Image (tube, rainbow, N blue to C red; front, top):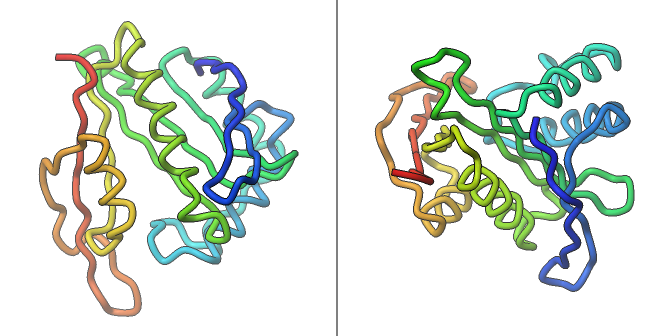
Length: 184
């Protein structure tokens, strides 16, 4: 995983926070954050019941990402409390290592404060300077207007649609496939 220097930022309301590389010492905080976010969000694919890593599994996951220079896992923190995360994984085959996808979330309480924008900009800056990465992909539920707006403002384009990719309580939702070319 790439290491980014710790960045200091302020939310729209003036509250300070940092953007940092996730390390093994963040393992328990990541677990707490993800569990809470899965309970709050209707837009994440994983359910809270499905997310049950042990501390050892979470730390192994973080260390595996950390050991790979083509992957990035960052978080937004207030003090030691994680309030947002973003992880990027590139293709693991020779022919697909130039592209990768990411997932991002911000705790419900802190949405609308510019944190997602900063996490996304950090990823784009990192990917743009990375010697291998040319294209950044994502999947987003078609009804997640706030996220789609953020991605479009950052020049992501829609490449396709996965119809009925998500099913919740017998209702189907489409996933938009969006991409940004960070280098041609």
